[in-house]
Image 1 (tube, rainbow, N blue to C red):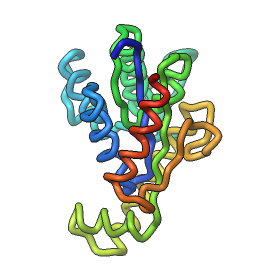
Image 2: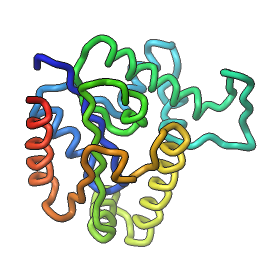
Image 3: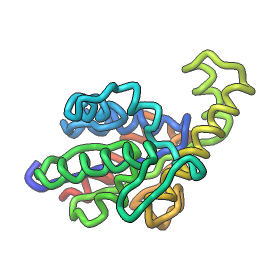
Image 4: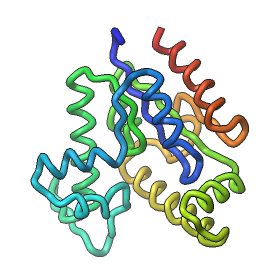
Length: 197
């Protein structure tokens, strides 16, 4: 790839957005980053991965944290900042990649090659996907979706200039329930390839 391309994919929980992001990265031969970047960060900073994972993409606890100037004792904020710095370093190196979540559409908004996508899905299809993936009852799947989306929204809106899921804030918003994961990937590949030209 001659010029840098960074594809940022945000998603509703259970929408299949993570799977679509993996397929796009594979189709384009790009590195793929998601929560696994915490493995590299843990190794680099000599930390336990479990200590980072429990704060990943979580909103800070207001009553349990303090901020003084640029300093904070909020682990949620510290882990978020570590990931933002990691993404900036990757982008500064000229690498092209696909990133899921981590407010990348804001963190990397000044990059010319950024393409931002938001993937949503119909409620019933998301519930079915989570039921099957985690072997949950329908009620437990509904609760899991609500909890994850609430945390994602709070986290995103804390660190981003736009609102989570607001179509004005992304290059493309698409409901993958209408076409399924494979066809939605094809549609997004067409858009990405046209943008890259």
